[in-house]
Amino acid sequence: MLVRVLLFARARELAGTDSITLQSAPALTLEQLRQELARRFPALAEFLPRCRLAIDDSFADDHCTVPPGATVAVLPPVSGG
Amino acid sequence: MWGSQELRPGARRAERRQAVIRLQREPIDYVRLVESVRHTAAGAVVLFLGTVRELTAGRITRMLEYEAYPPLAEKELTAIEQELRRRWQLTEVVLVHRLGQLSPGEISVAVVVSSPHRQDAFLAARHAMERIKQVVPIWKKEHWADGTSEWVHPSGETLATSPHQTNRSDSPEKGAAGVTPP
Image 1 (cartoon, rainbow over the protein chains, first blue to last red):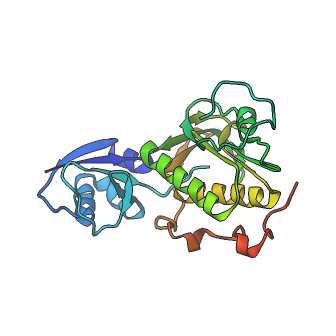
Image 2: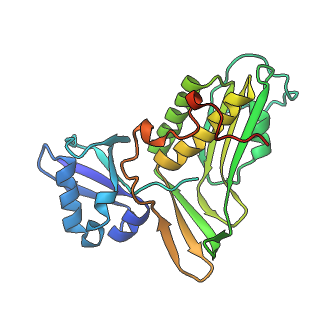
Image 3: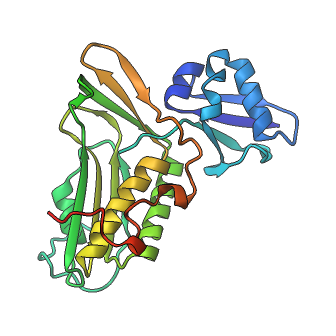
């Protein structure tokens, strides 16, 4: 299945891209997705644990499974205002 | 969103309009936003503006760059608006955040609320601002005058989503101790 990943702010800059589409086996968890992102983007590995993830515009815990075709957003600690 | 029709200040009737919740790249017209919440049902209007500060810990800011994840940011802003309405009696609520590159002095965020009573307006505006800084997926990058730049990613709050972590002296149960009228 395909999973689209969006990256923001420092996560985007560390990865060097604002989005990536991953081909993955079904029943991918967010924890597994984090591992895959860290593998693909070593520069992101250290910062990634500080980021929250969202699936299709809703915050999600690491044990959540990513539905096929979903969009996952990598969200660094926020600093609006 | 408000229409373009001109309404006599304070002459609005009692129908509730949809809250103004918006991310925008254009400058924030706060005068218009303040006028948009004025209402005959409201005895109080509170405006908070966040503006770009030039000096932080002795360093000079040349520019702040704001980025957001708009679908989730708008969803979280809407959730804040709904929380405000649950906790306080409010007439109108406006939450607007600017994106893009801002120079010192420019307005990055506007919170405007109207309420029948000042206490609710003060508390709601303050709480809205705290929540915006804590949960809404918006990020700023400091561009310093010395040519360096860095994203502002506060540590220790990556999981700061539970309300008990965010309520401080602005909860109505504790009264208005943290709020000083002008």
